[in-house]
Image (cartoon, rainbow, N blue to C red; front, side, top):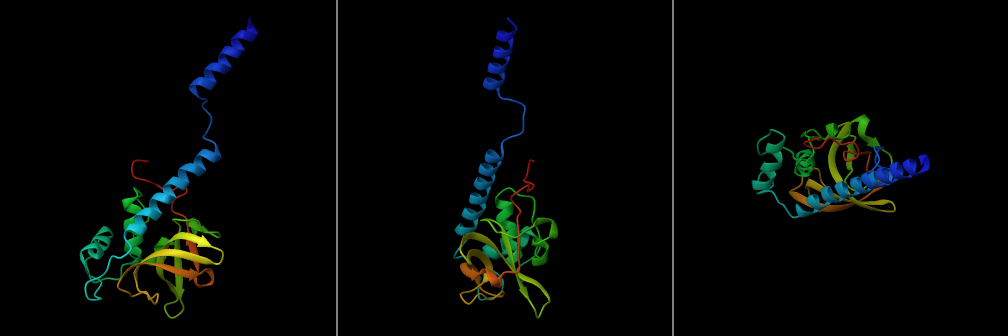
Length: 183
């Protein structure tokens, strides 16, 4: 009789679900979906252009407004922040590119949707950021705002750029354990 109770208890736990934490596989799958969403949002912005190379234009001003700035300001970090905001994340939310790469978020091996930062020696800081779309060996395909075909940090639009990993100083993961709206 005791064996029947144990078996019934096990059956009920299996049917209803156990109170244990989700498996790492399930969490990985959830993060993969979140990363895919961020990348898709970023790719949809490819082709946005400024009006007259002045850091202005309807969409550019939406990116800037998201971080409480008006038109005419550099906007690569505002673009990244806006993308994450569209994905439901509270952070990052800054127009200052170094803010998007805090020590608590740094990772060595980038995944899609991670933020990357490019260091400019003349400014002695990270001065341009983008979102990793994919990695192919030593190359990153990234979605970048306020750049151009040549890769400038004062460009004219949103581009998909291919950069060698040696040109990238840091990567930050805002997806894993990221705070989404409603969490």
